[in-house]
Length: 243
Length: 321
Ligand SMILES: Cc1cc2nc3c(=O)[nH]c(=O)nc-3n(C[C@H](O)[C@H](O)[C@H](O)COP(=O)(O)OP(=O)(O)OC[C@H]3O[C@@H](n4cnc5c(N)ncnc54)[C@H](O)[C@@H]3O)c2cc1C
Image (cartoon, rainbow over all chains, first blue to last red; front, side, top):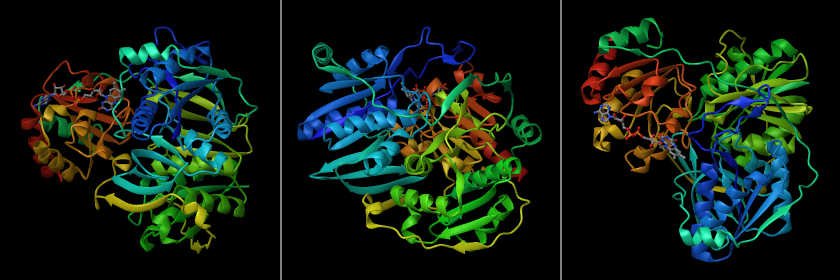
């Protein structure tokens, strides 16, 4: 079983988001970068599947040199090898083409990633990769079990779930509770240093969107602390007009 | 050139997020003059169709195939691509949702389109085509240009008021040829509570946190949700502990909601929870700890014991109605 896990390198969920260069760049000062939480679930499930069936886990990121510590962390968690496509991830379409190109080079039985990145929240790369490769893409996947050359999945829908059967290979956008996040142990961290991290050039690919200027939401007005339920109901009715 | 809007149904009813998408397209067409075509798939109740004309549709197409009642991603994408070509569209508008994302992303490749998700406003078409989208889980926005000829816009909930003054339009039935290959991922079973208000669609959400101590205390959350006709939500530990199903989990790693009113009960307001609720118009926080961080993100707050306040609130709202 060869599994490709695609990960993003994103600001920690507690980061204060600010912009610089006339609101055209993320201000990275003091920002800690992590494996995207959804991608982290995908990776954790890949590690569990490998324990059951053997094989290798390749972890892939499209990004510049700064993302290597994030890839090393994925190796420490249990991936066997890492690939960094050396390019700024310009848009979802560009990234999807890079992933598809790597996927064509080696035959993977399964391509996993998070349901969305937590920076741009597009939730688009898995479907694009699926369409480029002509494979099924399923997201958001909350359960994934292998049965020979088939998989049984649960996909979260609004108000419930759908159970799906699909033949390998396919692409899944993952979310909890597909697996529990894994924290790298000392042995993992040590061995990650000697695992291969290959840097490759991007393939020729176009972008379809251009990000221009960033902006922060307007600051929130001060909270009104009320003393009684009746006062609250009056405010909701007459001021907020939601009742 | 024209606009195609793809609408979703839930248990035979057109989703309100889809009516928003139609209203968005109608507002866009006022600027661009493009015709608004709407496509619905699967079983949709007869009485529901007239909402589409009111929301601004100029033409409505229906592919009635029952297999499309569920989330067969590739089949939906296949049909939309065909209808997109048929109506000579250059813009596809749909609501941001689990199915919307899964389908739109495949279509971006099929249609050679520039895709922007989480769109929060109408495009600026003075210089090219620029839309604002929500990023960093609601913590920021970015203006994004789509130079590509074909465009796909996935609209975030609560972006466009639903229009109700449009004219009635008749529905044209379409048959679209569906190859077996688009059903390669086979849905074997669907598990879904019926009659529930869907969390991402809801106008009011009542949400409970770990401070409620256990699933046996959810009766009062349900009671309050019922009088408000609200959807129920919860914090991550609550779904991790199995007190509530995962699809009720709100936040960074769960559902992102954008209701008119979000009532947070015994939830501390961790930054990851707030990331899922920052699209709400009004937030009410009920917490016994005056220092709970949620109060800083709230519009209204009551400091006190949820077990005392929630039943009183339910009664007060009942009395009002
Ligand atoms: C990467 C990452 C992603 C995460 N994603 C999410 C997410 O998507 N959603 C999410 O919710 N969390 C998420 N979390 C977890 C988050 O950090 C918090 O741990 C979680 O939100 C806390 O849940 P809580 O507020 O219900 O519980 P607690 O923090 O335990 O808070 C309980 C609150 O209840 C109050 N309380 C107790 N008893 C009463 C009473 N009788 N009456 C009134 N108030 C009472 C307390 O004062 C307290 O404020 C994430 C964490 C990480 C690291």
